[in-house]
Structures are given as C-alpha cells and as structure tokens.
Amino acid sequence: MGDIVAHVHGRILILIEIGSRFGFGTIILIGRKPPPGQCNKENDSDCCVQGKFYTTYTCSPAVTSATKAKLTINSFQKGGDGGGPSECDNQYHSDDTPVVALSTGWYEGGDRCHKFITINGNGRSVKAMVVDECDSTMGCDADHDYQPPCPNNIVDASKAVWKALGVSQENWGDLDITWSE
Image (cartoon, rainbow, N blue to C red; front, top):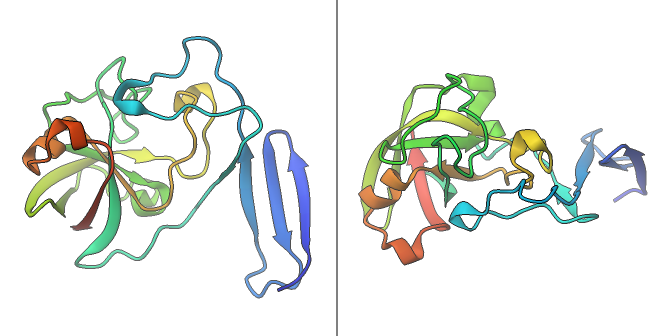
C-alpha cells in the first residue's frame, strides 16, 4: 500500500494512492446541509450532513444470474423523494407501477432503460422496469434532492415492487435481494 495524497476541488475530495496498481483515486463527496425544506424525508430518505464525507462509485458488482443487491424504496411520483423526473424518459411514474432505479454502474449510462429485471426477495419474485439511475457518482445537491450518493449495489424500487414481494410495510426500506436481466 502506497502513500495517500488528497486533493480538494470544491466539494469533491480526491484520494489518490501513490503507487497504486490501479492508477486511480477514490472520489469522496463532502456533504453540505440542505436548505430548509429541500430534502424530502419520504420513505425515511437520508439527507446530506454538512462536512460528512460520502464515497462515490462509478462501477457496480458484475451482473450475474443472481446479482446480490440491496433493495431500497423510492417514490418516482412527482413530489416524491426521488427528486426530479426519471432519467430514462423524463417522466414521473406511479408508486403503483413496478419500476426501479439502478446504481450508476448497473444503469450503464441508460443502456438498461425500459428493460425489465427480475427481483428475487422474501421468497418471491417480481419483474420491474428500469426507469432511472440511482446516482452513485454525485449527490448532496438540488438535482439529487440533497440526498447522498447511492452505494454501488442498490436497486431502488417503487412501493409496487415491495408489495409484490410481500414485504410488510413496516419492513420496507432495506432488503437483501438478488436480481437478473
């Protein structure tokens, strides 16, 4: 392991390991406090914390026939905690429709837009359409509803997905799942 060098560019902290065989650094986002009323806490969403460091990711684990992930909950409706319209079609989607956002690496720059994935969890499975990116590279700003960057293993799902998996509402929010194309 080599020496670590840090560079700060605005709200971005770049950590570079000198002598790293990979030749790249870890990007850390420095959180800022949202303006009053600007972080929607629906579905127990996290809001960025002033000065907290958040790791960002450009890659996700390889997609397999049973890709391990964390299922989180998101509202894709206008005014919901998902922020703006979905990345794939610039539209909002009903919480009653089985739709998901994938972490940046899995989203693949939109290549999975409008494709269906199969989600397995809680002893059941459901098909859901990819309509958005759960941004793993940026966050803590108005475009991201002042929420932190997503981890690299997130399938962020509408309420319809949680219902189809038969998860009781008091347990919505974080579930170990597998998914496939």
